[in-house]
Amino acid sequence: MKEKHKDKSTHIYQKGYDVFLTEPGISDEMKCRVCGKTCDVRRNVTGPTGHISAISGNHTLHDSFNCPSAGEDWHNKAVKLVKAIEDTPSQTISDIMSKDLKDILEKSLKKPSK
Image (cartoon, rainbow, N blue to C red; front, top):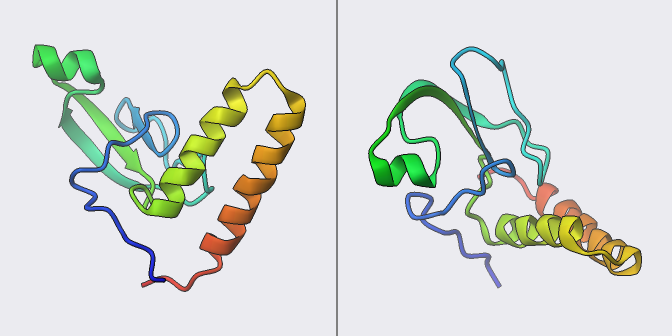
């Protein structure tokens, strides 16, 4: 079965996982915390940098780094696993979820780029 890809324009990025917003020029590159891919970068973007700034209309100059795989089904699952691994107090459950994460990443990162 072919994997569905989400429309990235409607994908909700997970700040600190698959999207990073920095002061302009602070970082040359960023790696996705979920899959390790080098993020795409847009420099000197003016816009909100969080939920509150979006609601209040506060726009800030920043650089935006986004994982090129964000929004894909496998990446969304991997984000959930990374967050769950961080949140669980159980080392046993963390180990099981870490194996699942490793399996998803190995399978998905082997796929040829389209």
